[in-house]
Length: 283
Ligand code: AMP
Image (cartoon, rainbow, N blue to C red; front, side, top):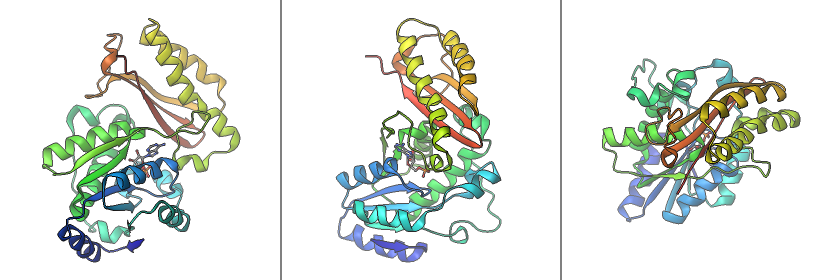
């Protein structure tokens, strides 16, 4: 695997690939890689001749300094995993390579980034859009791969692509979970075994809610039950639990437009903030 920390040598390398008509797939990550990330690498390898993964903990998307400071950094293990997966290129820049000292660009996605994650993490999606725009410009991939785990992020990046006319196909890869149902996340490394059992609140709430909604229950009832149930999970604090339109991410409330419905949840397990989601997918 070729490893680049600087933009220009990476550009030169990829120019050669493009001239040889190789298709390029991009998998952006913040490292601390797990099977969820590797599923994106596999999806890219299946469709492209060159797969570029990036590992960059993007400071502008963190609205909480402690979360940024404590974000797991496992560079050597990440490199081994990427090599074992046959990833062709790793781009792992330092902050000075990605941002000027007086960076001040801001993105605004209207109603899309004011709800859910955007509501609780102000500025988060502006930072995501900024770093993804930079990566798209640097790598100029044919295709880029993202996880359904960060569902709102995918919708934001899709809007970014439409507005900035990026000629890149976006792919969304299903959520990879532990056997228990817990969605894989780099932040899970910060959970104890007991925390992990309590973190199952997210997946259990989504699964239970989906079953109940399809059985005729209203979302208000389902949500109040979840709010009552969370008390049984020690150290878990529910931040939001919503039923939304899967394209606009605006609340569906009790409208029962389930073919367009997605359940989304965020909760703290002690200090660690986790998110998960589940499409209702009624045929
Ligand atoms: P991150 O390193 O957390 O920024 O994630 C990098 C990419 O991996 C994003 O597109 C995530 O949506 C995706 N991802 C993270 N966790 C999972 C998972 N459990 N299953 C599938 N994709 C994931």
